[in-house]
Length: 481
View (tube, rainbow, N blue to C red):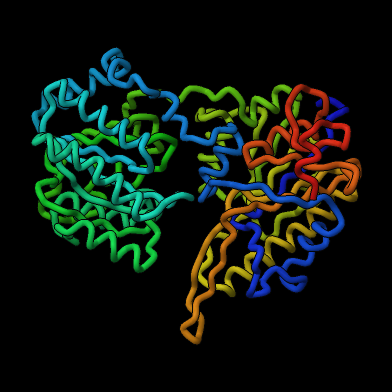
């Protein structure tokens, strides 16, 4: 380790954000005394974030990319890229030789995913593949509206109505894939039986979902028309654009007898993906994820340091993937420790093996206002312990969040609690060398947070920072708080 590295702690309270109204008086000194004290006494500002979950947040934070990596990889000239892709041609030939159905699971997040889905369907048809069913995965994104969803579905309908070889299958929220095994089993049973919620009037279904303010990721599976049943010998292609956990759904298709005692379960199901996905078995993907240009581990190598991420077991594979630039590898520049209420904070932050510490707390898994308050109290209590150690050993402490929740909960009198932390993320900088009134934070987003932290650990290394002095450039005068 270089002696001139300034040890730095990033304390994340993911799910937390700035609710300027705070009409329920949650963010008072009884709930978050340390957050309030540190914000009053040190540099405090906010950053926008378009992330809606920790996976998107960590991806944007670590590799500095707003869009999903697959968008850029595929680009505009998709047809010619597929024609030249050996893996795609091998998959297409395998599917064609079976002469069975091909089930494509795809996102319809925006115009990019729609156009890419269209091009892939066009290319598969060109290979002679018929009988394609499109299963639509819906996700909760920052700019999601049901009007946009209806528009996106109508755009894809034009392809389907003009192509007798393509039909819609099941519509489902992304939580049905990677959240809960029981929900994934419900989806699987619908796919193999064609029994479930049927809505020939799609617009009516959309109106109901909108009126109930259902999050798209939580939509229970439904279908418009039949014919999509997954049967023996069928193929499945996941048009995934990032490292998603498909373990449950893949395992159900490949080992159904481990989960069901039904008399007839389809076997010999062949599964493929666009990019590598998380699964118990190796799934053939059309593309490999290329290492991103910048990411946390690469920064650690540049400044000859090592990072420790304190998080929960289920998040480690994803955070490791993002911090290694979308590569599922083990780096000697990055370690993990399990987050625990009884974590010995002093021992953790004084471990001489590390120079950069990330505490990954999350308050998003709450179901009412009291649970939210308790989650904030717990996070704030740990922050107090971390802040004490940082002051004792002269560490730099950054407090922030990578995404914020937006929730509504019913109250006793049938009124509604509306908490909205989704627009602005807090950024508190506690460092005796970064002085309130003398240093300023230039406008940035969570994409700019990691380079700022690295620059703080080792200044003058060519890595851009949001922090500046009055003489640090014109931007410093634009974002003084």
